[in-house]
Amino acid sequence: MKLTFSPASPFARKVRIAAIELGLIDRIGFAPVTVAPGQPNDEYSQINPVKKLPALILDNGEVIVDSYVIVEYLDELAGGGKLVPASGAARWRVKSDHSMLQGMLDSMLLCRYEKMVRPEPLRWQAWTDDHWSRAWNGMARFEQDADMLARPLDIAQITLICVLGYADFRFADCGWRKAYPKLDAFHEKMLGRPSVKISVPPPA
Ligand SMILES: N[C@@H](CCC(=O)N[C@@H](CS)C(=O)NCC(=O)O)C(=O)O
Image 1 (tube, rainbow, N blue to C red):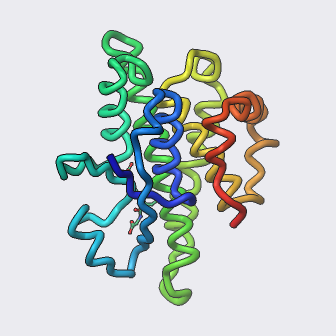
Image 2: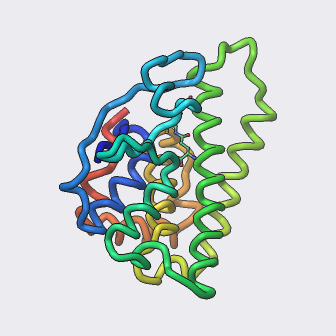
Image 3: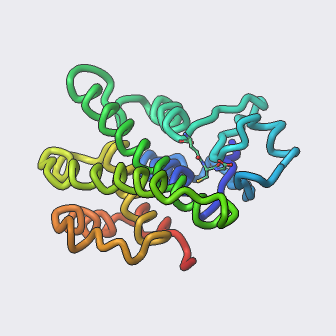
């Protein structure tokens, strides 16, 4: 299997951490890809027409897109029910938490693109502020979630790690550690896992 990848992508990091935790990392090759809004990449569009990474290219040529779907695929390969609970209330809690965190990441990425990619005269500050507030309010939501911060590792927690790591990477001055001390403690604890430590985005 081959994963399209960028060390800066929080979505690719999610899959990498999951693959390490599931014991599948040695079965996955990494294919570096550069994608950004406004930059065509015809070769990659053949693999994923919506031009987003990561995508998992299976040995038979089939392509699985979206970081969550890839993690579910890997989870099943590892026996199932490991990072995504198999059934019951825990399953829906983890999936719903994950969706919220995924929305936070999407918003953070849009803020980043607005600043780095959109030409200055076309920027829309109220729109950026709105998206940043979604990420920030999401952090406030998880700061209050004692279950999320203490339960055994799952895909929602991995995504929370990726949110916080992306905040450090692209919004270093946002002050999340001071505002959210319980998230800070969670993040520090998680950095004790080799999968988390090894996948911290490189200095910008
Ligand atoms: N829902 C997708 C989101 C993936 C995503 O937005 N990836 C970013 C890289 S971090 C991307 O490919 N951006 C390129 C673009 O939007 O043009 C997932 O979870 O895999």
